[in-house]
View 1 (tube, rainbow, N blue to C red):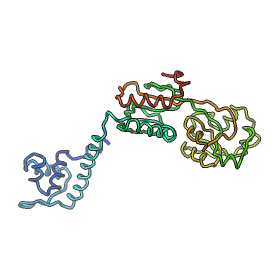
View 2: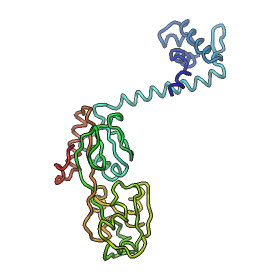
View 3: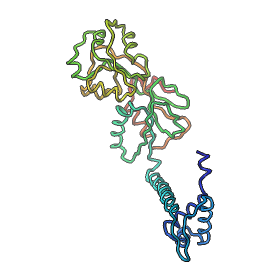
View 4: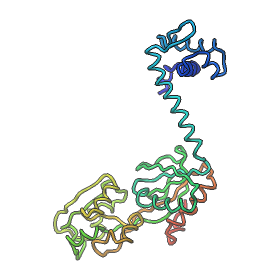
Length: 310
């Protein structure tokens, strides 16, 4: 990128050219830029020498853009306008009201977005910038105020507070259970279509490991479909395509509404946790502090609140 910038003409010459092309006059461009006509003419000539072709056909008392000048004028004008528009957009967002959040697709879709919706009714002035990624991004580098991460809670450069641990069980929708169930034991699940998130963080979210950890004996090979997208995996379970290893807290809304049910009554298996994280090196604004305190109360399992604060 730095090599490409070396090919750019001097910025002053581009400003002089853009103003001259838009006004079709060196004199009017000079008034707009608060310089002399001679200075504008000199800058435009400098640009032409830099580029190696003429941008204006000069008459006794007028100038006209050449074909190359017209093409360059459209590009330069669009570039300057884009800069102006971006500055306007930045100025229209009050930085002291902006909260930058980072999390994964599953957390943002099934847990965080409904929570933000409730908070907007409490504080309509708060603005949100949401960064969604499977990767653990550098919170300070991306100016992240708050992150919700899944794992052990130990990430260098962050302060982490445990919100809730994931609790998984074999879940499906009501229609699927009516068609394939009832299931008397975990081993019986192997006769039904099973769905799996192949990028799962916890080994126990993989069916083979889950059955092993639960001590189930499988009588035959399983029917299995797998997904590399968590949202697609959840949607397949919601659509009744099979049984997935899912649970609270991300699926709590579907369990509460009865959209998802347990395929078999078995004790949920606890896994890693969801943590509220903040970078150590930045100072939070009052807006960020207010939202952080509120969301911690909203999402935190009070039984686990003191379990991890690192």
